[in-house]
Length: 152
Image 1 (cartoon, rainbow, N blue to C red):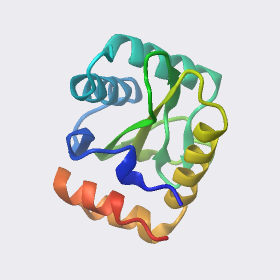
Image 2 (image 1 turned 120 degrees about the vertical axis):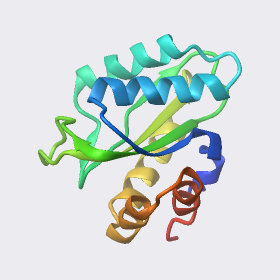
Image 3 (image 1 turned 90 degrees about the vertical axis):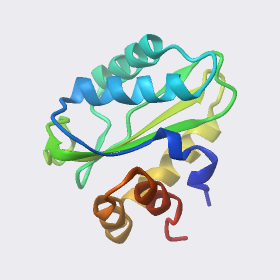
């Protein structure tokens, strides 16, 4: 079982952000990761996340999106999690607006690991109690705690 605390940190967890678009949400995630991780460039992350979205939306349904991309110079999988005050259109597969966005950056050379991590994350986020716990969080601290307390 993937441990979310291995890829997420409290500093990369933001709660109930207001007034954002899909593009702005990706920008916030890119900036959040770049500020916390030495050697990461926010513009580069943002461009890669946007390029990935152009291949097909990372909105997986139930109001959840998992934007992700490979990134050179990244030595381990990194995550950032935000919840939104108002759900936004993310071109999700079920057409539902998205209010929980979990970004994932993976090393450029990672193959299987990245797919396993993505699958584990998607599987956790497909559980209604887990999604509900994330949505109930009212502070970044509560959100981080809810994220790492995922059901096994």
